[in-house]
Image 1 (cartoon, rainbow, N blue to C red):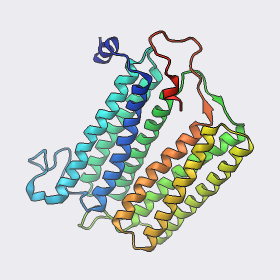
Image 2: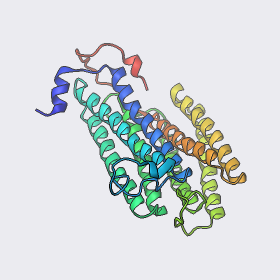
Image 3: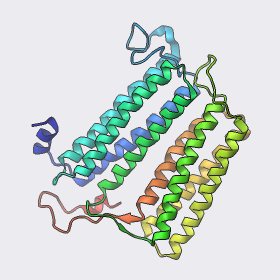
Image 4: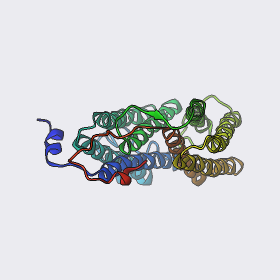
Length: 319
């Protein structure tokens, strides 16, 4: 018997607990994205000389490494908190009665992304913060956020085949928004990789792009997302979409408005560190909003047959 099966025999999480476990992974993923940005913005990317140790002789940051070592090592420690959150989600999914194997697979996928991205972060240190490796590290974090959000949403659904809640063209528009938003995030790594915040005070290589051009390309994709979000907002009202879907379209517009404003302010004020950090938080919130909107365009009903081991609290886990 595996440890997970042993726990599952003795514990059955409530739907609320399952949903909270999945949500904790979402929250910690956002935290690790923001704190990872703080490492770069404070010039602490090479605060630890190597990986997986902080120095050749010490697993921990040493006083000689100063504040930069403490910041970099602190971000590494948060990976363990993230792993704990993902582990909680895995245990809760495995212990649910009946066992929802799809949720367990999503939980384990998060675990493997965390592990692989930790290695990718180590490679970024080994390569002296090569901008392409740093960009890949950030994109992998967003891949983790994608799976974490999908897991969170799925905890509030059943396991029946998905069925549409809006007409086909509207669903296509929703997934087109996801695609363009993904391109927007990737384009943002080009702005970062060619900009002045290299992550360390030493001579760190940059991407061979003109910063102004990269920023303009990024802004162009942002405007495409804005136009698509506005169109979705009004189309959902025309087709009389469910209230929760329309609310998520509204939330997306609010996040886009704030994120776009921050982006332009930081560009015209010389890219101050604090605004870049807030912009990174906005990027994560934007991605969550886009995914939740697209996923709300379909539903997975719960099984018709009631499960005698569960209480009737479906309202607590409504998407």
